[in-house]
Image (cartoon, rainbow, N blue to C red; front, side, top):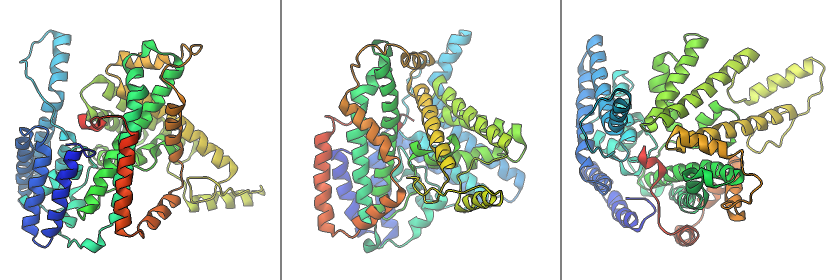
Length: 502
């Protein structure tokens, strides 16, 4: 059941009033939301409901056992079994075909021919289940009631493509009293409307206009088309995935829940580390807290830090799918992060974003050295002043980071490393031929989408605050007009969200 469809509109039109009607009857509300979430998930394939229910029951039993056990060795064994079981389930459904094909091609070993269908969203709710049992093991959280945990793991707005919400974030809100007049309806409508536009008008348009063809048959097009297709895919993936999470966060808001932010203008990042602070933020912090830190983080020396970065990013790539391209994509980013850290260490600098205090220290150092200080106030994405040298450095960082990420997206989107090379090589040939796919409309969509990344956050907050003062009837009317406009501008038919395959 896709968000931007009539079917989902009817579904949500039933669920939303029921949710607010039952808001004071906690058990009845939870049962209703659980039933609605299972209907939503089972709409694709009802057989997956047994898997979701099994994951719910198994992890709840494990969490209770871990909480009640006092012996540290026994607790470690229990959490290892629980996490291992979750990973085994994920691995079976997601990587069975990949490993059996690899064994057959490498060693000629035949394997049972099983027709394994990948359950939608399994990567997302498996990571949520793992974080739940690990948080209980770390005593950061106590086990929830089975019904509460079932609602948490299956909550339909973010069930199939995130954001990855922690139990420590969701469960307290499940217990809170929801008051209708305190719901941020204006912000929710903005998020849903923005998500619809990103998905239908931008992502689906670019996919059909240029991305599918340039990545599907790169040998048929010249360098201008291929380069535009690479830029187009960077925008398509962002618009598609962030569009989904915008709608998910907005729908959750209408139901009285706040979800963490998942994207923050990632193509305005000044470094690869900064990019991962802005892109799929809930996955980044999950990998940091449940993989990178347990591996040792940056506490064990320079080379161990680089090793941990490479392992974390390689496994993060593998999480996206069974294929060498995803692993190479993860290693590409791991090498980039490690290289940035090496360069920062060699310069005696850190690669974290500058703060106002950092800027003031630099200004004082320049003043004491006798040099003139010229403070720059016009960096469009920063609330603090920067010197002209710092502005140039940041814009160079943005340019390098964006193209590093775009090259990674070539690997990410290709169905094989050979196809990725064909796309990459295609950017350097055929520049004397006229473009076939690149036209003014495609160029405007790509450049406009990139330009929006640099809109100052303050303007967005001011717009949101202004919109929240609009009367409800005007919001409803405006949203209806917006939906019709999106339907008119978007291509016919709605494609699946890209991250559904992960």
